[in-house]
Length: 357
Image (cartoon, rainbow, N blue to C red; front, side, top):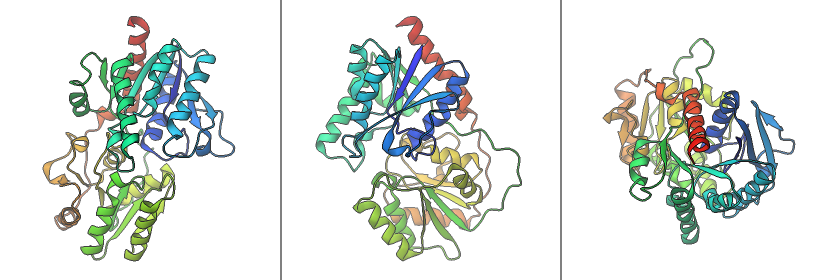
């Protein structure tokens, strides 16, 4: 089948969990023989974006830059363009873009939706936007030919609401291990990674560091804001006043260097899907301290890796406990998060739809 992908801002070089997911997944599917076109949002892919990447055709269409219309307008244009270009299946990512599932079906295309999390719980959305995102989730659960979720926890939550949906659990993954190189020593550095959005909980982490700093250590928060707003500006101001290093958006290579040198990785999130940043930190052997939220409940972690979400004091005490008890290099079994296996399982979903629906 000719497969079109939408719901992502695009790749390479675009920040975001969905974007990383797509950049890792679709070149592997192309290598398995799939005919893949990924629709990218022109404002985010630069003035001279590549026409292809890793065997994947990249189609760059315009989109608004408003957070309320960016995804839905671009997905609408993508679905129409995909039909005109002969696509037989559309793979849509996230709740908002899933509002276009009925249109894709009306135009005669098969549909797969990957839900990366409960986007309607994000603090940045008002009532109308949350209602639209819930409607997108409903379209995905009731009208798509297949629904992919990232974890067994997500499947258990969504199955009662959509009992007739064809639900497949396929997790996020981690990049293949880098070529053997000397392992740098761990530094006296605490690392957090993510976009500067409220659900990532960085305001709680910064407050924890302001009130209960760890002498001799530095806190680094890697990641930028989608767009400048009052929240991200306030984070930057508070970080600068507290000696916290904010890197802004950085490359995957630079991020890998931070993962490999950090004494401790901290994830203070209030809401996640299956966090790629956590998996990546684990792949570099970092010790971790993470919010006790369902999406972070990985079998490779132990009870003392968690702290109550939303509590600066709990974050500070978790960091201090880890460091004082000897934060260490760790080895995790991450075989379930192999992108090659994930690509093969995704292709199985496409084949199932082609043969049975």
